[in-house]
Length: 323
Image (cartoon, rainbow, N blue to C red; front, side, top):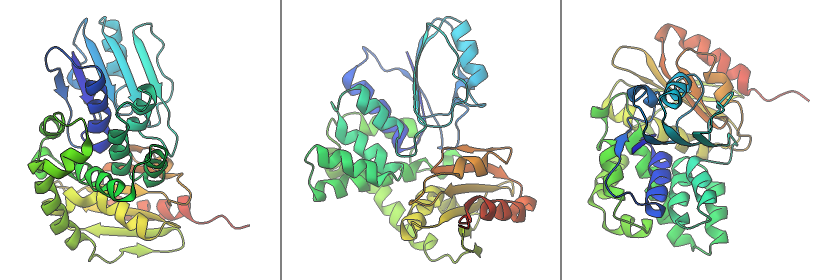
């Protein structure tokens, strides 16, 4: 068995729900990485006759060729995701649940398949993906109180925070290690109350966000705000959750956060307006290392010389349409 999953809150919570529902006789091989490391199937494309679970990584471009190779090698694959996929390969050995809807995440897709069996973990995953509306709707349907929802939200934010960074040594925990910290807890409220790993993430998050929220926009217009953070590990760690925080401050406009990578290129996090969760993926796919979903997308390595081009494209994509 091989479990392949995005190293963010959504990937971890999606896999955790599945493994709570369908425990394995022994631990699967875990394939994951920083949140932006999504070409994960390349690491196993020569595996033969194995059972593979793939969660929360885009099928489009980065993983399509590897998926086809795995199917040709006799692997049976379960694939669940909420990113743009393009054409999905047809095979009797592929079970795909791919729904690129703005208010869905992979944890919510798994929750639907499991009929709410471990729904609080789906709520954590949705909060981590900044889908507060979807998380709260599910919580209210299940009768979860506001205090408990607040704890689930913090858990999702902190799990997601750990996934960002240019490389694994930017992170507090390797995502596979963080999944193992999560695995003993059927109830995320118990994880919130008792996990030493979550306490470590909370302390780091508070320090990093204090630095990030002091930033002023590099560019601001009617389309939204663009921020640039310095080339420091704390800035790379906080890039995604800080973009979410800025988006929550101003839900009517788009946001982009540029963080310098070690090679001088820029890591870009884009959030479409929360009041109109569309266009982030369209913008980022205009650049060679870009991708994502309609509400939230990114570029792994934007050449610094293309900063002005990106800002112009950002404004063009998100400027309000004249009536």
